[in-house]
Length: 436
Image (cartoon, rainbow, N blue to C red; front, side):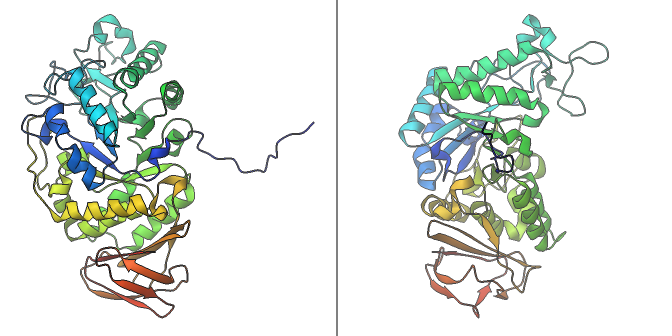
């Protein structure tokens, strides 16, 4: 009897993302704040601009009606869901939403919905029809998720099979009825992993979907999610920006993550998202002079880069979370930076996502407390990235051979040959992306 070789390596990740994910970028859409109208139709007018920016996946923050009981602020939190199979009337109608999805698809973009499976609004009808689906406090009453200050929501109990069946059906509803392309799962790790594993099976039977977990745990990638958050990378970059750590902390981060993380489990890299912006201030406060090299790192490291609404316009305020607080749209150098980086990601296979792209290889240099340098290479495409996370202009020498070659610098178009004896001059908080 022939048996399989027990020593043959087996892939950890058992799900395959759709092929369009291979070189995709992602953009978080805050419908409420995006336009004066705050509607699907008004947002759809921005799609040509976002396409030109290089956006592929539109992640829409929750689009559902918002609970009124125990609401925070005047118009409440998106994450207090009153009806999982309806749209927030402030945003428009179901037909408006379907038209938005169709327009995005016709332009070669994809739409995923932010999904709040962990909890609902206090006045969600499920509290009346199926109160047993909710967790209870010591008095037997509905309760917000324990230990958090989420007073406007109440916690589901996923030990009850009924809520699992209902939530799976609701997730299937939007794929079947509106042709959405997947989901971003809010606090995905608060919910049993076996629930997500089964959801992925049922969704993929309708069409191949893309799943993003708001979490940072490899077990979610085995059967359920294609991508999860790089929270740690964000925090290390912020510590470096504020001088709490030097650049060697980034080497340590990648040394640990790239050696322990499945190669085909995609990480989402970012300097901003709605949580960071609303609760921890703007990117200009959090990253200061290190903002541009941090953005370059998020777009060239292994993983998929994220832009949050308004970032490309130099968003310089923390958007109110429970009130109307419009984004001011303008041309900005941050938008130009992202557009250039996204163009490279689309064209150069070294920067593709997951196993489609090249793995990061460190290039040791003589300024490692200030400068991060690495190469990614695959299929004759190659990118050599050098980032200066310090306030001093530096001359950098390299002690490796993988970086050798003839390049064009992405931002200056300068032709640069890297030899064994080559030195690179990098401005304070500067960066070079050498492309082959």
